Length: 253
Length: 261
Figure 1 (cartoon, each protein chain N blue to C red):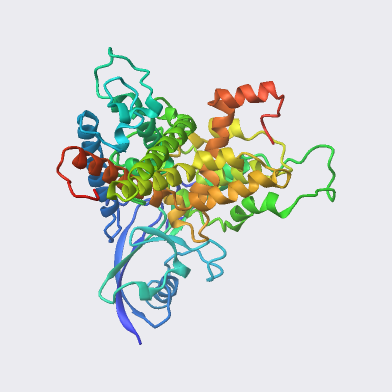
Figure 2: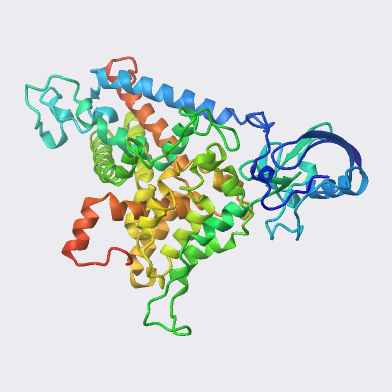
């Protein structure tokens, strides 16, 4: 069964632009990205949208649908009523290249700032031995498809552009947590998480978790555990004393 | 035709959307409900701390337990002790108020809730906050949220004392509505305490080699299951503690007065 839906889509280059109204056909089983493609095919051939897999696995078609960050390919039209006007805009936190396509290079810059996996110097590739229970906690974070909707929705940079130099965003704080929890990573990441990547800016309001299309518990399983690890290092005198008395390594245990 | 290149200044701008949010759902409900419930909790707590009807043998109101002043009735004192002498004339609840209050104030769930509901930072996801500047928990005073684990240690003690109060009530008045209410409250208070993120970290979350610590790993698994329900337990325990406290006070005032009260 098909019907005509009312769409408002952001059109423009750079930051300049406006919402344009369209009336477009919708068929049963379609998703928002299908409708955007129909607009391209029928009414707005120069409408720019980034997409790739149409299966919720590439993270390309991140956009804001009725104000909420979502993947266009995973947002079913059946979740809207037929008389509803659906507003589609680009991700707000990143600069617009054209229409729905944003420049997400902020995220690649932040990724480069995090030191990569650092194994012990005396362990050669092929010699790693670890049990499943030691790595499965951080395997959850490997599900990330880098749609960057968590960084987009995080108010620390969404509402405060000036915080971008100091704040890596949930996606990359999760990456730091993943590496810090890894049994074979020896780099010290706790001080850097707080001082260089802005973990202290996070006020754990859980929007990153709410929008994650992979349902990764970013806040509960990555950011809060990382905050607790930072507390061990920087703010807990008892842990500091215990490390001194028992001569424990304070970085990895 | 203007060509947009990688170096074009225009490319550095976000979409200039004037609306604070384009969300069409009732995003304001969560912060509003949070604000109302927490405000009611604060108002009740303020009244309860200064209310003197906190003991109706064998029940002691949770807000006044442990009762540590000589002004406490004999049966209300923890193990009969009253370390604070006659010089202390303020309500006994004030002596321990900071511990459970601090635990809830620095709790990761409550932080989320009141940052959204009271400070509007942000009021809801993808809804612009009204503040011009934001430094989060990176500076004083909010950097003090990092002492949460110390309040957790205190909350463990408070939880055990409330459980002890429930056991005493169970022994002295096994068939009593108040006993049942205190037992239920003690269960939820302790579940909430154990589900704490700091507890999860201390149990084994700080380790990277679970396989070397099988007992701690099992404990971590248990706490992790509770932790997934931390928000629910935080709210349920808030209602049970208020309910239990109010019930004991109503019994103490004689307002609730029936054989199995």
